[in-house]
Length: 335
Length: 231
Image (cartoon, rainbow over all chains, first blue to last red):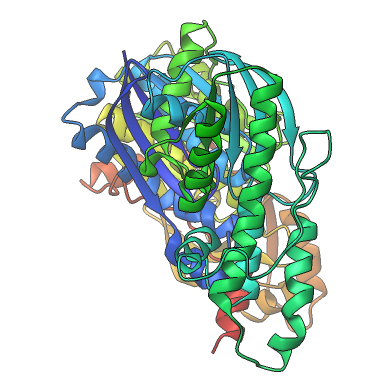
């Protein structure tokens, strides 16, 4: 079964063709990085305009580059839940039009479920049950995955998402946007133990996260020196800050895995591309004899292949949408 | 030539189907209660009411706006993806032109007006009728009503939702007392969008399916801000 995925929930216009929820035949992502750099972040109205300009090209390219035609497409999966409303609407309008004109099923997908499936696309043999950490610019969420599409919420961020903290600190230090890759790269030249930043809630019994205190702590420690235009040990700050986030994410996820007695951890979302996070997870999981899985780097950030894979799984459960499919910008993942 | 016309730029979502001179379906749905998510279902309903399917349609007309930014994005996306996926031609039609066409039998200058939704700022343009069609005179206008009043130099008919209240506003402006100003209340109709698309298609014209973009007429606030302060 060939599913066309469409993802426009934030700042990437993306379409992909995925066979049987497993084989990525094409994955086209038009980034808005030029706009993000110009405006220092996502401007919803500007992002939505760009989606409208690009959506047709991206869909056509996904089909053409897979060597297929529209006749081969058997279902349409689209991100309809969680994201920027104006952006979601463009993808959903395109998906409905395709579903109607081709008379093929339509599936509305939750963006977070897409990220969960990004890891399954990359690691088809990843076992269930497992514990899944979804960590990106918009989310930090810990789930117990009982079975395909069956979740239990273990913890979530109480304030900033981890990726958001990366972005804000990068902006504060004048390192550019997006913050994750910049800090990751710079950290390689710094000492992880140069500064002892707080590890918020690391000892708390709850599996929730909080990153705004860490962000504030870094800012408070250096704002005076920045105001005096002093040169800062940027690499050391970046590495120590990154280590604080990594420490919290790894220790909480590991504790969840041990409490739930699972043999596998799935780490997904944009921040799962972070090289130190991957290294720390691998080290910690090796000690505990737990397998850890990450998506291919191309599937970490927002993409439509993961939406197609999640849509395929939902369709197998008989969950399809009608042409009145609406968008829900704040809908939580159904658990 | 059967043409489907849609416009989701404003107060109503409109879907119409025409065949030559004949209107086969023409529906308007109040956008507030029958919102954007139903536009594709409404297209299906309009086609069914005319005993047609999408296969029976030759081409698609889409209202480009100006109007609700979110609305025109949905309409333009639906129009172009339907056209792409059925290999049919698409024609974008400025919504101001759709309103002006509703008053094509007027001999005076035609001024369609659409609220921008912020303050008393409006989108407007001037059209002149002739030979059963209309042609725009001058550029699109985005600004307040006093500014529009200054542009009036001859008898004019305002067309649009709230045209009468715009007429009253303008009539109070100094200097326009010698000019006759009338008002025609109208909302953009799907059949009119289809008709204007048909006129262009008959001339062998259509828009590029993939690059079709809304007619915003205003840049986003963030962009305006950065353009003003980053120099």
